[in-house]
Image (cartoon, rainbow, N blue to C red; front, top):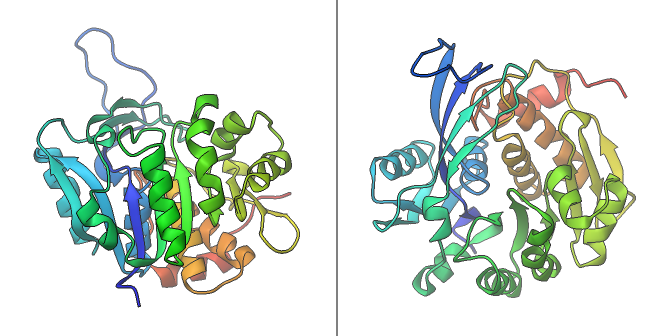
Length: 316
């Protein structure tokens, strides 16, 4: 028996968000906006927080700085109920951080300091604990300079040897990222990237072709988030399918992909089929998109189940 439902491994970042931002003021002038917020973010950490909100016993495995930003991240993770025993502190570099001026339509350009993302790795003495979960999620390949490549391959191989279910997402993918991702594909049960990132790596645009690219290379289930167009799923068993997004007023798209992954993880942990898991994940992401930051308006598993049945869907 494992101690945790999910172990989320990789990228953790402090996001400082403000909205709505339409311009950068000239010189030393100031503009007034409606809202500023600090959040736990990142392809591993935001997913972990959302999993915890949705009721999973969640362990976070990452590195933050020995600074006030790292203090905030660890404290906030603990407030959400995450186990942070394997969140290490690094005094040689600052905590990863991003400034996000969120546009009125929810888009968010980013100003980013890589910081501890580049120094993160799973130490040998942490390996057993990092794999002590039914589901092991890797998030952040492409920014995890010390962990990317063979260390991640070895970690994922070990996860599968132990019979763990694996989920995977990356960040800021480009055509070069495929060399890091391709050796991992045979060890990935649920691959949950955005269509933009997946297309960059596959070199094709059509979701069906993109999914086939990754499945031919070993991925069992390809789950491609399409933003406002919903999701395209090519499952291990059965025929591919698409689901529409929910009709909502978007405030901020930060963390929507991470929250969708959390929804998939929750569905898998409960033994749901992939269509039901994707429906649930869409309702998770819809709540996040309606608020500022990587949690948005996400509140509970029960509320999400209710909304997955009641939130209107976009017309086909």
